[in-house]
Length: 159
Ligand SMILES: [Zn+2]
Image 1 (cartoon, rainbow, N blue to C red):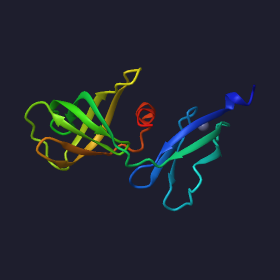
Image 2 (cartoon, rainbow, N blue to C red):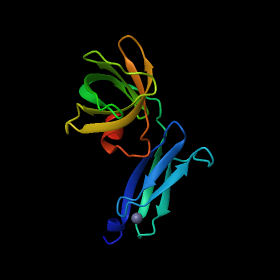
Image 3 (cartoon, rainbow, N blue to C red):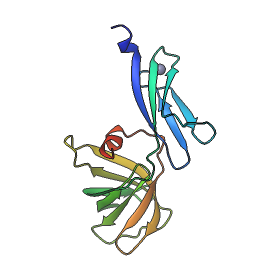
Image 4 (cartoon, rainbow, N blue to C red):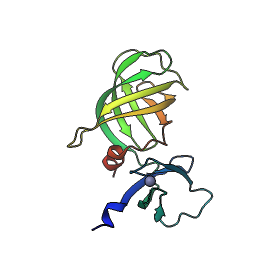
């Protein structure tokens, strides 16, 4: 059984930029993987971390799958500190769309933290650093800026 304690499974979610970060669960060492410059036709790999852990990695390319949801939460404007309640209407690993419950002054390019609760059994709370990409009458579209941060609960939720 000695081997099993030194093995870790890690899922790496690939961002819009084709980059993903492999993080060793044991020692937190990170390594950026560029799936553009390497042939990642295969989706699994093994890597030895310097701490001795054998990482069994899995590359996830599901970039654009968008799940239609209805999740309540709020945004926090990173510059102004203004906060507002939102309903998240769709979510993907790359971004989200939400409607604001009150008036808002959001503009394209604004940086926000959006926090919402998933309707999974764990009721996981997810906070994402996002940038406003589009504003329609009812829906604010945002893309994630924190693709380097793994969100295991969100990844599992979108499965
Ligand atoms: Zn390590």
